[in-house]
Image (cartoon, rainbow, N blue to C red):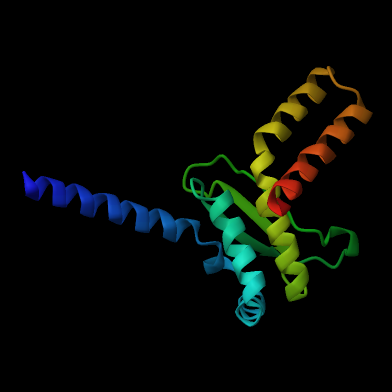
Length: 152
């Protein structure tokens, strides 16, 4: 009986460790962001708190991209809904300044919490049951709510 309990505890711990490894956003962060966070303990605390608060039950990965277009420099996120892929992918311009990268990733982490609300709004827009103005206003509200919750 005790061997079964020990085996179950070990199994659960291994599952948690593996899940935690998949969720560790810092493993895919740029060297510049890692250096920035190690030099700014308060930023590191906020970053890890946001990460664990947002991705305790989902996986995330940062993808870096190249672009010469100054209008295409904003971070973004999406949920691929594809087997074998992380639940959320955060996209960041590869040559962003570390502080911009930090703020952008932090914002996208928080913003990803509203994924269902964004989806509902898009469905309403496709069905024509929400006006363009109301759609834009509601998208901003979802984004604002994410930041407001983080700020407390």
